[in-house]
Length: 465
Image 1 (tube, rainbow, N blue to C red):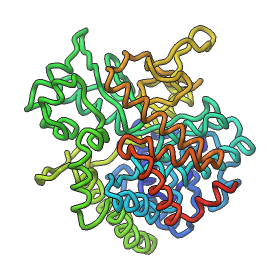
Image 2: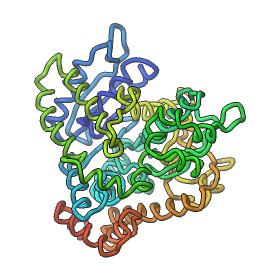
Image 3: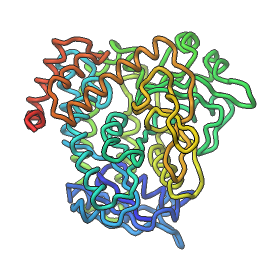
Image 4: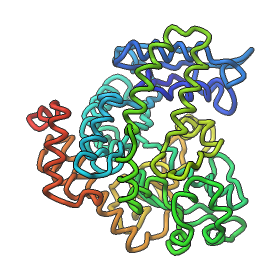
């Protein structure tokens, strides 16, 4: 099978190659094509792959590592491709800095996928991803698109008219929460299985509400156990009494909603935004990687670990450290490759994915929403069964009133953003900024869009188009 990675010069590409070279996914892919618009980034990542030692998951003696090819030509990259994995960042890390800073300068949360920054990111990204989808329809119409490009839910929803069910959105955040909670509750889940798990939401906005084992829901006991909650990231993010009253474990990104003011204040107190920190790291690192020879992997891995240590740092105000399992890496690529393996017919899998909110009956006939109360055609993030025919959502319980209100509000924002990006609808963009719960102001919405238009002049071309 041939796999093409759009964004092949991306920092996390070595994690995919590492997973494809050893362990459960070895032999899944025979050829790995890395496509990127930046040849220097491609050269740097290719150097890391060549230097990856067998002891860290790189190809050893007799290993079935995929052949690697790099290209800056999208038609060449897509030709005869079976699967496309998209993880692009239009504007690079410099664009991420602007996404964060424009919002922060107006006293708002400055985060790349949540709130105003996520809307700005989507407005730049969706047109590029639609171009990729159109090229896929022409050059590899039978290929699947596994989308990790953020904001993953919005991008996936925008691609549905072009690719239908052949696009599946992934994120490691929800699945990571479920596995961490299951371990803390004393019932670790096997990879690719979600028996007894209840989870509903949108990308970066969801809740684990059920965790069954042997017919018993272990979640209430976990939520009432401060010692167990203290053993994993999400359990430490929120006060124990709050979690017990909520009756669910929120995705880590809900920290920005439940503790909005403290999160925004912590971000403003930092000398660098998260985007600035990553931008400076990569600007210094990539040129060194390309010429580092045998040391390229060692340099990259040290930078990767440093980057993981800084993730959600604004929520760790008392010097807490991330779990060693989180620092080791190995999240999103396992989700992507588990989806790919199931699509290839090597065994079904159960994963939390971004897919249309539609349950199906016999013959694939649509029946009812997987998450009651949300539109059946909306992309949601829920447990799914993945087969060679695609991802099928599993039915979930109805969210509580407050959760459903928030989900509906953010879904409205997502759909306004998709409309703005796909139809060049500027009023829809103003509406998306204005209606977001972390903005909630028509005046601020208009100021935000004007600020992003100054930061990204190409946005004005989108409205003219």
